Amino acid sequence: MPSIKKQKKKKPSPSKRPSYQRYAKPPLSYIALISMAIDASPDKRCTLNDINKYLVDNFDFFRGNYTGWKNSVRHNLSLNDCFIKVLKDPNRPWGKDNYWTINEQSGFTSAAVESYKRRRKRLR
Image (cartoon, one colour):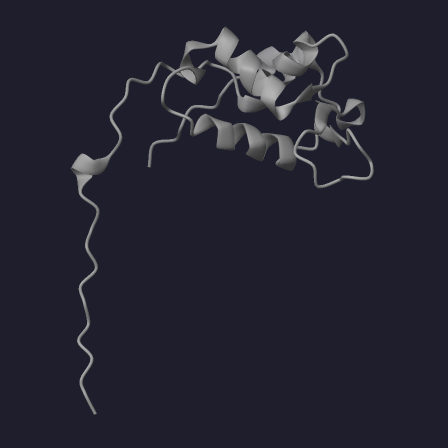
């Protein structure tokens, strides 16, 4: 029986990290930023693309090559009960072009945006 040699896993080189300039994050949480985008729309509902466009148009942090923030927006929309997905087409619930709106029953009000400032990271 032939012996199988274990190959060492290569560690990623620190020099392979993407290099780009990132602006400072706004002092608001993603919940507050998303609610600002929804409130700015005429019918108080936005698609994910509308929310992303609002953030890019209004905050330097969301411009440039860094796109990791888009995952944070999606995460906050789907996991926070202050946002509701409104189906554009009830026959296509899996569609990606649905609307998002603020859940009035969640107790969240966009007037309370100031209280939704970003929390500081704790020192360990």
